[in-house]
Length: 219
Ligand code: ADE
Image 1: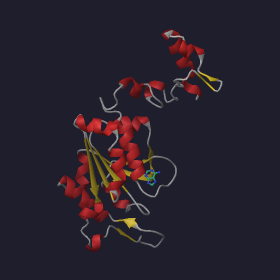
Image 2: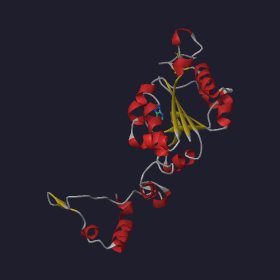
Image 3: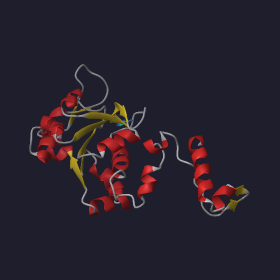
Image 4: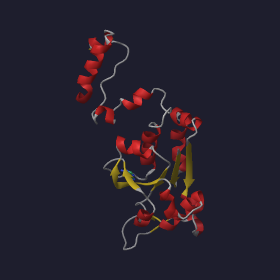
């Protein structure tokens, strides 16, 4: 699948895109593309934002700038892009990201639109299929939220995470009925008197499975 991220700060993604599982995804044929709205603005002086109609604090990302960037990349009317892929605005006003939404987004190409300043002109609703929030708080921009979405979606793609079982039986997946994952321990078996539960050291896989099932919800 292809991920297209539109942002004013493409360099914010350098670290994330250098991560091993992203490189893995690229080797498997998935694509991560970054577009800077500013590179496609039709306005003079590389302008991308403006003051809000009706007054108020801050600046708003202009809808003509968002459309120009989408049209430059997709070579089609900006409002048509959502007919062939999911177009997601990152906004604190959106539906909260959860595992089910991540799995759903992994079903096809995804465009992520990052806002900045006070957000985007509301007419972005003509362009998007989804408005997504990563939680009930306001970030200074959509970039951190976009990385959360990229990460949650990319790890759903077959082969991206080396051990597929860890993707299925992990926290908040449907497999665990929305509950937390069971507790995990590694060496040393006893550290400062903090001991690993005996059952996990015993090698009886049936008992271990039962113990894990009992402890799934308790975290
Ligand atoms: N942009 C600013 N805050 C955000 C949030 N909580 N989720 C998604 N995008 C945002």
